[in-house]
Image (tube, rainbow, N blue to C red; front, side):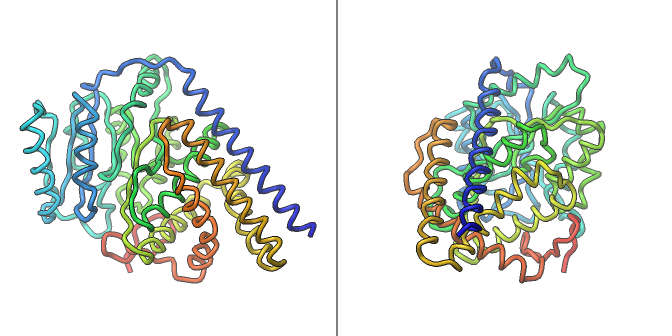
Length: 389
């Protein structure tokens, strides 16, 4: 039918457009001259929470990947498991590597209920940072050290009048388990096309809260963390706050391996619902024609295509499945060329499954109350502020 054919053609055009913009943005960064950075100029701040089976592995990986960067690990006083993990890591490292006081552990008092725990903790230590640059990094995120030379590009902004923040690009690599791989499929099939294509058209209006970096004095000058501590979506809140002060947000190609462990189907659905609700807040606060064309419409079109195919019959369902298969295969090739890491071919199947189940998650999110479970507490997602049930 004409409607189905039109939907399919438009969906293909949008996908090709996003691939093209993303690849051009990535290659433009690749062409820029890189230089070795002085790691002694950087401090990585991480808020650490126990519960993830990969916590020790991920924290250790960042220590191994760096040589002179400082680390501040922020741990709740009541989280004995996280504290023990941190101490065990340091003891193991001291046997083989002299850390030279690279790691400081801060035990933080209980966070007031109405505040964002991560931002509250960071606000307690930002004045104690002694280096020129500060990196905010989640405890389940590992920086690709091969890409870290890109920081040198932004250090050259020293002679510019512009104030800036840079943000990394999330991807999931080396994950295990069905539902963890399903989350990885969603992240990997969307993050590059979303962040890079929007950056290509100069529409970077949010940042990846799992990793961002800026001058320490900039965070202090605008009292950033104190001013956004009541916000649930801290990455969007921080971006909005800084953009209002004419601070430029720069999308980098510094890949960050985020390996969120998802144990079962329920956890998968709740995490996906949370992300979709957060996206809804972005649309309320930062909607634009470019966002509609490069993010919202490409997200809606496969859903419409799938529903139309189901209505029209099995022949059309075959075309939908073939589109998803080609799209997932193209993304597999696209990532391998950028990351220079050979993914398992099974990621194609997970991405197809992710595309097929996404309409169900959309419907589930629409028909259920906008409530998420976050750190064992229920929060109503309305305007980006923390509102406990």
